[in-house]
Image (cartoon, rainbow, N blue to C red):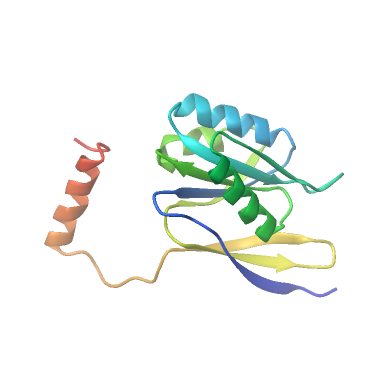
Length: 162
């Protein structure tokens, strides 16, 4: 048996967030759809799920054609069993993340970000799985007083703090 590692770059267009996770059941597609639209009714999103048994298809839903197409492209590029990709516009992962984690078939979340994402894939003769993710860039230092001020102003500007 041989194990190979690959890096798969995710497509995350500007003004978009991506959530990548793992679940265990075909029902995930419908459950995540319901969670997203009931949590943030104005959200634009696409969702794709890699089935790991039976026909092994990419299952997809969403209310935005372009986001759905990109989610399908990302899931197809991952080609890793029981993984899902959600692309969000006009909402942040924080708006839906707890609800997604509470979905009975969701096993784990690998990332939720607007940053560039590279996914580390392990591949064997049987299939592929996510080993981890690279979310964003390397550190450039430690925040100073001016950086703290900018962080706090940003959080208030987007109304996550008062």
